[in-house]
Length: 200
View 1: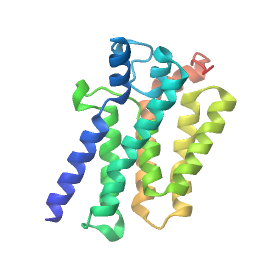
View 2: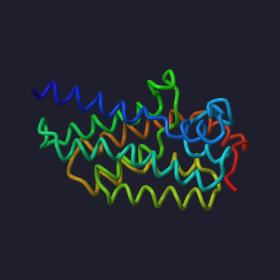
View 3: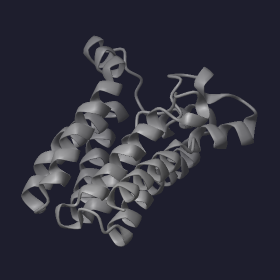
View 4: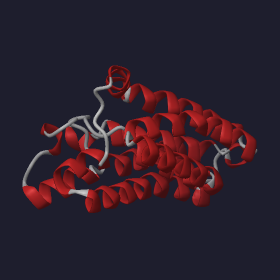
């Protein structure tokens, strides 16, 4: 039964994470494939290039909700490994993999920042809120969404360590940060060259 619960958690979380929010919004409104625009990402920043600031925030919120939902469900209903918080972590990992490698988009997608922050909010809302504030401040002051994302997620494991008792949650934040920063490797190169696009 525990094995079945683990498998169901991973599959359901991955499928929820795979829902291509940005792709659906842009395709429905304009008929365009967002993967052929700008950075090719399905995330909120690329949606903003096509549809403006309003839809940037809508996509951001929907992706964060998409990230949080499977983790909350795993925390509430899961019984397997409850004392160490393993199933919520597996749900979180599956969500960000689904967002970045969506089964509905031939394993393409976004960079999992908003969905990743959503998973952290669901694991520990105080940590998630701190990370969201850090992201907002750095993005606002630097005008680089990618820089805000990279720094905020790099800090996340340390904040989780000091504010939460589950070592599994800290481990997830560390692995998630490494994965999402790796997805930003082209952004890092552009930042170093001074070629990264700023948010107006």
